[in-house]
Image 1 (tube, rainbow, N blue to C red):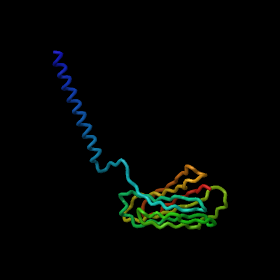
Image 2 (cartoon, rainbow, N blue to C red):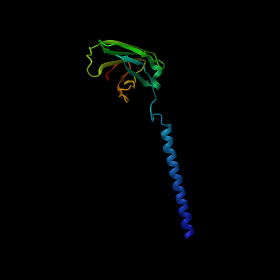
Image 3 (cartoon, helix red, strand yellow):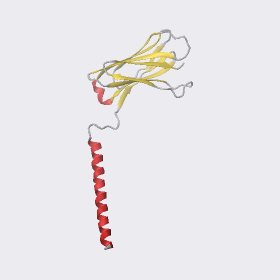
Image 4 (cartoon, one colour):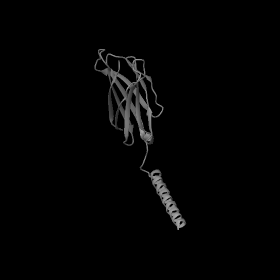
Length: 167
């Protein structure tokens, strides 16, 4: 009699384990084959580096990689104080066409505190999707861990990012 209890227990356990394995397999396949579920979205970016009164600023324009072929052009304008000098140091246009301009047309800066900068981006595309602008001071001896700031918005509209460059 003890043998039959053991045999029944083995059958029940093997069927339970088989059922659990099948359920786990079905659950996993539903996650893999679902067209709407994504663990992450791949983004691409171009990131020119500009100089603002000798301080370097890395500016990224980011967009979903899946929408890259809908993008027509990007205009990036960095507005700095009128009494300061600025220039595009590295104009990285490897991912998509982008024009970067530094415009010394902002309010004057008198040397106290951070330098106010405004990053204006316009991404022209044949469809509407979210784009991001991220500005980060380039690593230097005064600031070893620079903080990035970002702004997001839809394509075919202006994205404005006010930013303070540490002095």
